[in-house]
Amino acid sequence: MRDVIRESGRASLHLLGGAALAILCYLMVGVALFTAFLTLTVIGAGVLPESVLLLRRLAGQERRRTAARSGTPVPEAYLPLDGALPARVRTAVGDPGTRQDLVWAAAQLVYGLVLWFASLVLWAPALLVDGVVTGLAGRRPVLLPLIGRLADLDAAWSRALLTPTPAAARAAGLAARVEELTATRAGAIAAHGAELRRIERDLHDGTQARLVALSMRIGLAKRVYDTDPAAGRKLLDDAQAQAEEALAELRHVVRGIHPPILTDRGLTGAVRALAASSGLDVEVSVTGLADHAPGDRAGRPEEAAPGARAPAAVEAAAYFVVAEALTNAARHSGATRASVALSREPAALRARVADEGRGGAEAGEGGGSGLLGMRRRVAALDGTVRLTSPAGGPTVIEVELPCVW
Image (cartoon, rainbow, N blue to C red; front, side, top):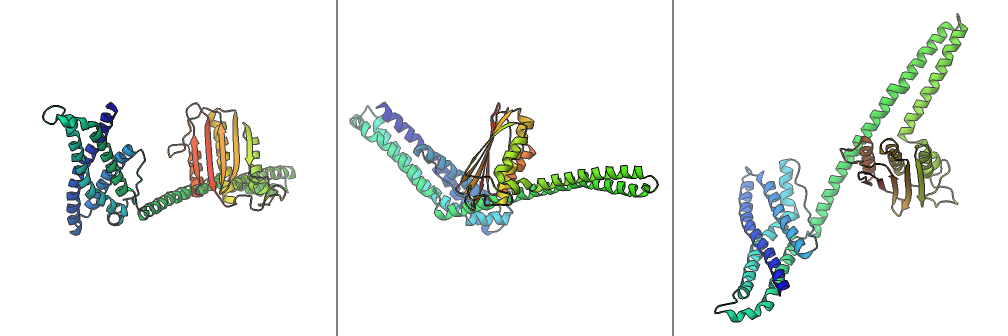
């Protein structure tokens, strides 16, 4: 009996919340009518988006109540209300979710109050255990469970009215995708700009300065060679050394654009070379990928099927992630060991780098520039980055890059 009373009490609280929302919906109907009038007069068009946002908050509260009662979340799908005022007004009017919320608000105004009053009617016989209606007290075990059914009915109606229609879900999904691609494009442009500035800086401060010095030494050598051959030869030797240094720096710049080792040895060989030169004890495991001969993007016939090598952009992104992760581990984590795992998935290339360092890495806007650049580079290819780095370690970076094999 106590369990029945306890459950009936919880159901009644749910219905009481529905009645409170019904009163708010009553006020919302008045706000909607007033907003519609102001919008028609054009003067109050700016009120419409704010009213729609208020309606969304009410519907969101009902979704949370329904989810708490049923144990299953109620999805939502809205078009984003951002941009200039005309765009916000058009979105607020044209969003299928707005019309759906208005229908729910009108219905909630009715069934929220009706179900609450019905629960009060069912509680009355249970509470009047003395007096002229004592005979009804024996019906308590029969009547009280009906309150729970009323609460379930309230949740079922709200779910049916607030679950997005297929059209609304598609529209909201498309809008979210456009917003995601816009952010990805901005990140890719920022990463590309940073890369161009790095290349320009390296060429200006390194290679160009050495080439200028080289030209000056050759000029001096030409001047003194006839009068002092030994000094001329010394200047030419210095010029040759500077030419070699400039060539080495130029190779370094080119390697930063697209590592030649990727073309020569493929991703597997390039990652093994990174691991060997990282300064850490790195274990490399490879699943579904093979070493490749120089210039062969399909791999050796006995090792991999045609098309088993990922596109060049995907390989470059995976190589950059591994290189950045191992560099960070060697410089900042205090780790001595790390592991790299590359795997071929049906429609993606997956890379996982883990170290046993102190942890605490952050990949968001507040994180290091290397991790931020990693996230932007992967996002440009529609990939995903997952970083796990609790204080005390370990740090694990997992990247999934979509590709066609």
